[in-house]
Length: 135
Image (tube, rainbow, N blue to C red):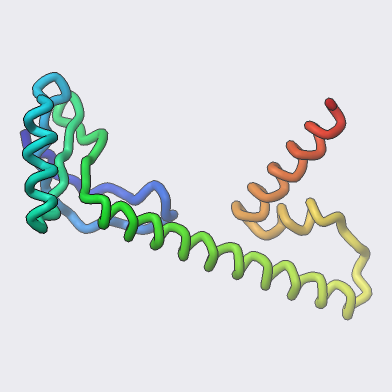
């Protein structure tokens, strides 16, 4: 079965993926022999993923381990870049706040004012504080 996609990468906000087509193997038709065949292809240098799912909807992919490592490195680099940008913005705002004599705000308020990444950070901090209080 073929599935056409013009999806968004859920791990990266507002990043449109190019249109592409994949053959979706229904999960109930996936056999152990198929996996052995894919491994042989990967060992020969083939990189085409095995896409499977139900109702012609791609739900999972089996890819060569080298491709998985590249994806993990890319995701880690993107996370480091986002974290670095976040920390730089926190520092900038703290410096501006101190220089302008503005009323101080809590670190949680500052983080939440920085958008989704800051809100996520503040949520994690609050959850950690709540866990400590519950102990």
